[in-house]
Length: 355
Image 1 (spheres, rainbow, N blue to C red):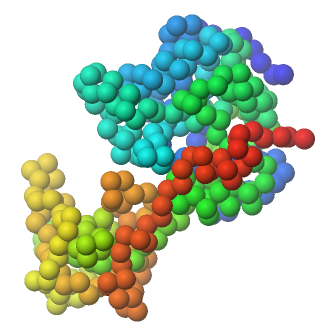
Image 2 (image 1 turned 30 degrees about the vertical axis):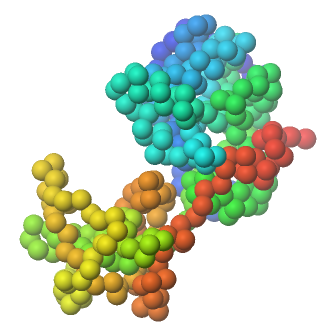
Image 3 (image 1 turned 90 degrees about the vertical axis):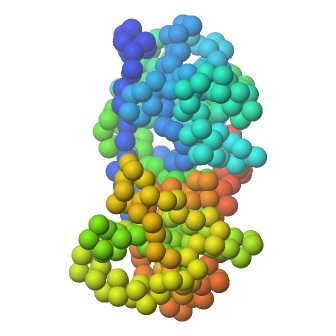
């Protein structure tokens, strides 16, 4: 096995930038690639040096104080020198909750301790860069994965989970198609490649999710143009809830869009969860919205949903004059699978055979 003794800096300090992925439309075909789920959590590098243990974010910020239960679990592993790559997730009612992850980034230690007991986090592991003082960064992925599987098999704890992997791209795409909102995409990693910190050596296909939304209102720029469309979906009570916005319209289209929206003003707007008022921090984007009648439907592309809203700005795809606004409800949004259901799509262990 290709290994070398680790330096103290590799163990004790902010270790390295995680290996990155290049966004592609199609996964690279076999052979020579390993395919893995791209989880919707916090990317994390976990480092242990004896009793000292830290978890580092993708940006190199320490996260250990926010996830004391995961750090305590890493200290219970018999191997006292580790450097692992993974994803922090928090299951709530059996499903992954990005909102619960965000709630952990709290200044009060008492609050963090309470949340760590009520909603314990897990670390989904997919790479092993150092074990027992031997660095594996220059070793090929197949060797690193073998060491990781051996490590997880020797330590039975629900806080540390082996992330699934496959040599079959069709199987990986089936995870994506069946995963609802649990996965952000699928990653392809070169089997014979080393761990290239900070380099886009992997390939990534992202989950493509669309929704037909009612345009419940819009916000104006300081000059009176259309700054953004506010998107809504009907809830179970028949009320229109704000779920997000889209704003990337070419300048040439904004004038025509303003004329169209002007004919729909003074409508009901959002009758359920409504936009917040003006903000002194960002007045242009937070101006009072102009309510519209419920007649205009847009199909948009979105990535993830957090607390009932699109996490980031949605991308406008097309108008849907053929779609009745009342058909635009929250049932369109994908139900996230439980982590156990993802493992059920593999062999219930996440392990891989290179035979």
